[in-house]
Image 1 (tube, rainbow, N blue to C red):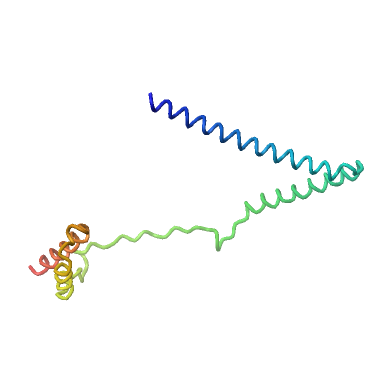
Image 2: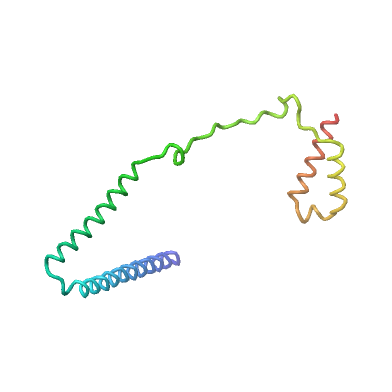
Length: 141
């Protein structure tokens, strides 16, 4: 029952917002219409027709430019070229497999000694350090 009421409340909120936006647009149109009426009130009919033709020409020209520009494409900048997907080689298949040196192993050991509460504070890092140790021991075999 609670979810039905919240759904109705959300719909009412959306309807109120939509009506406020629509009312704001209508008020803006009315203010603009009154302003244009005040400006053109003393014009003769021929002046009004010329102004109307000029407005139509300007907006028609802008529309034509927008339409033509949408069909123009520049091959250099706008084209998106897919890049080939590189598949990594398996570590075991490489000639020089990933080797953990003695120095890196010592750094891991020193880091674990330096931060004894590492397992509680950062368990993901601790697991990674253990993984490095296991890899070092496995390559020694």
